[in-house]
Image (cartoon, rainbow, N blue to C red; front, side, top):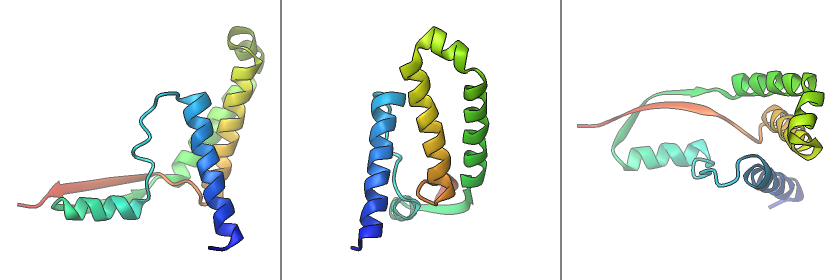
Length: 116
């Protein structure tokens, strides 16, 4: 494995660690898997995939809007929740946009039915 791939894996690991630690402690991260493994698991379980849609572009746009709103409310958030909370969310939302833009984070919609 070359250094670039290792760097990408490390960044993904740190991104998910940061999210788990500072943004969504205790959240279920079991769905943080590749779409390929989801498709294989569905087929093995007897499902037929009817629709697969990438929501990555929409998710990136949503993160950008949320970040803009966060920045617009900076003073209020820092007053009510503290500077550390504001900075964690600012980092998380900017990092999320960057991960989507560089194809290191993806979001999909999958519609599947159980075969008879």
